[in-house]
Image 1 (cartoon, helix red, strand yellow):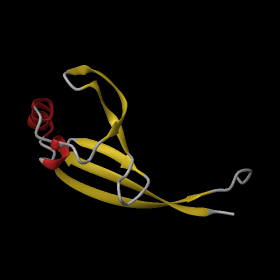
Image 2: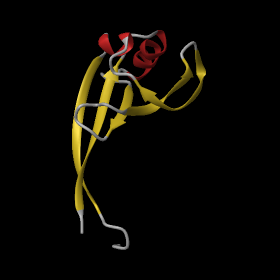
Image 3: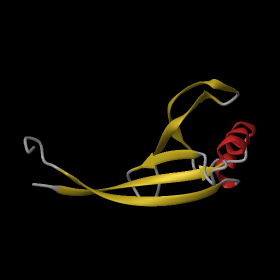
Image 4: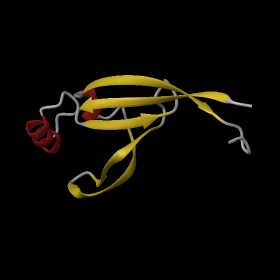
Length: 90
């Protein structure tokens, strides 16, 4: 049996020095992408800094959308419907 799931992509343009430098190079309206699986964005993940003061060391991090960084960010969200196949169905 197939089940529909919703995936949410959160695009953001934050107001940090690193993202401002990225924006100067890319000229893109958004320079960071995060993923969530619920519309309330209770759990949001992205590839980001493991330590806030050291931008060199990164990995998959859990985002806090209520942080000061997100409060000052410009964001856009896109929901995508996907069908998840049951185990054993190819």
